[in-house]
Structure formats: C-alpha cells, structure tokens
Image 1 (cartoon, one colour):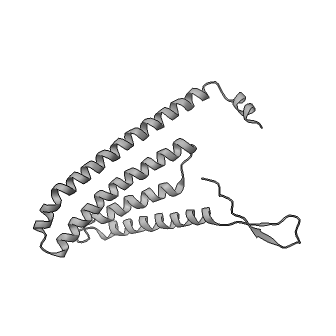
Image 2 (cartoon, rainbow, N blue to C red):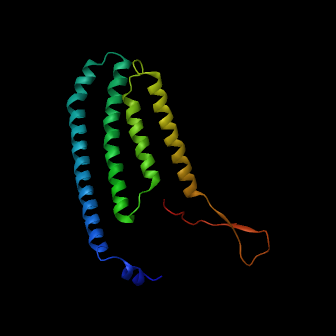
Image 3 (cartoon, rainbow, N blue to C red):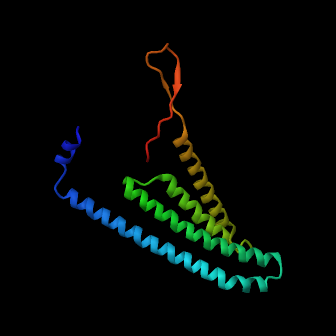
Length: 174
C-alpha cells in the first residue's frame, strides 16, 4: 500500500491530533529542559556553598562518605532529568519509546536510592527488594542490548545447501 493510499484512508481528525501531540511533546521537552537547568543550578549552588562547611566539619571517613554519597545522589538526579529529556526527544523524533532508555532510567533512579540508603537502620526485606529490583533492571537491560547487537544467521540464497551467512541488520525498535 502506498503512502498516499494510507493518508487517504486516515480519518480527517488524525492530522490535527498529530499536530496537537507534537505541540504537547515539544512543551514537555521545553519544561523538562528548564527543570534540568534549575536542578543543575541548585546542585551547583548547594555544592559551592556547602562544600567548605562539610570539609571543615568532617572528622572521619564515615562522615566523608555520607557527604560524598549525598553529592553523588544530587548529580544522579540531574542525570535522571537528562535521561527523561532524552526519552521525550526520542519519542518526538521516532514516535516510539525505546526500552533500553526506560531501563537505564530505572537503573539510574535505583542507583540514586541505593546511595541514600542508611544500611544500619533499613529493614532487610526493603534492602532485598532494592537488590532484586536492581538485578531485574540490569538483567533486562543486558538482554535488550544483547538482542539489539545480535547478528542473526540467515540461510544464503543461491549457494550450496546448508551454508549460512551473518548479517548486520539493525534490529527493530520495540
């Protein structure tokens, strides 16, 4: 079926709906970009104003570790915003959501939460839940990336029976 036949068979309300969807996605991109800029400014401000206070009051390695982990959590929060912005941009360009980006978002978010866990006061079942979720996300990400980079083996046409060749086709996006 040709592109003209497809466009001819579409309802009349489809084109304005696509324009509205594009407007909404563009507005989301703008809002998320502003949010990431504000988050970066706040993290930078907190870092610059409080780094000297932390450095003056750190007495041992456990306090240094706690202050460092809070700083890393702030940085990961900004990265989480950037990855969300990337997800919306990909949707705007390709009109689909890539699974590996969503899994990566989950891994970054869980990594941020893991950095903020107080291991001495947390319930062991909650810790088990966190570790199970991180493991599930990591294994899922591994298999999605493996499926995307796998080289399928297809039979050669016009060659002797039983011979195969490897191809490097890009796999379909989920």
